[in-house]
Length: 449
Image 1 (cartoon, rainbow, N blue to C red):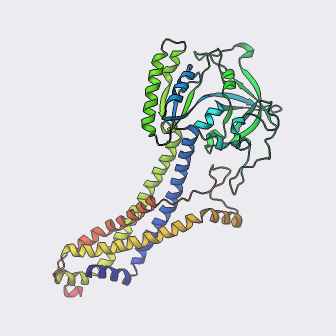
Image 2: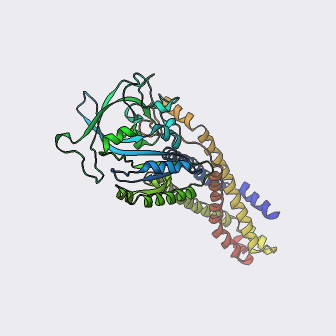
Image 3: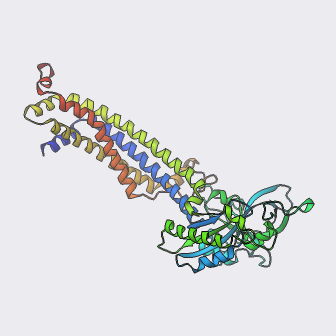
């Protein structure tokens, strides 16, 4: 009991302890805010990728794609662990707006709408046809026209404060021409001479806001059969991917292995068919592996941020160490008296360890409370700063976020507090150990009294 009372007395009587508490508080305050926002951004981006590309993807990087996919879709439909599957054909096209001389290069994605909205969250990303997504390729102003869905970054601007995209009551009657270079099954151009491209006019029928910037600024969605006619020659229809959504409760890794086994058996059964060689480049992957090239950079940034704050924690350790050296140097008489009445070196270390834990606990709890308070009001504070000074932390015309992520994770807060207290203990360890080693006779010399 006396050890705890002494630790409390040192905490209350020494003003220098405020320096240590403030160092811990500021460190924890910054870590709580930055890590919460960073984790929120990474989690949100990861979630959007998962929802948009489903659980498992059978795909090829070749623009030629692969054939004979329809029987495999039928096989997937029979599997109880598969909730839905959707064929996809991705390619590159040139977009021309009549009246403008500039041509733009876009990616095009051909989708089977009825299947796609069951396998992915595509229905949640469109605006004008949110209530009837199956008719997304029918322009509201004339349903007899061939429609297309364009990434929202190319057809709408954002409010610089709220991040909301502007939408008209109905999509504008915009006609675009999409031109592609059709390929044979061998990967060569299917046409030659002056008629090397396939071109077709489409009308803007809706926009897609996936939340994935690269897609929202460079992707056009079209009916699968239309893209197959534009991008391939021959009777055998080809695709570049199959998006698969697993039944609720299924483990993605286990289910992906099952799909891989089904695909390998399917490929073996088609070895004697025409275009069977196209299966050689096809892979079966989890959604995360399929999108690793996009998600990994953000995760690396999160890791680098964590390392930077680890370095900040090391600085905190040295601050605590200096504070304890100063406190112990002024409390040498107390230490000598305690050792002279029989307190063991371990007891001395325990006293200052309790002292360190108190500093860490108080500083971290104050820093956490302040950080959480800022996070709860983060978006309101940003709006106030913008209205008052015209400055915005995240310009919504540049960043894809809407609100600043401020979802407070209890396990993250717990780890931060635990690390702060541990840093204080480490910082106090060397001074405490040195104080515990000193002999009472050495400490209680006359010139020390």
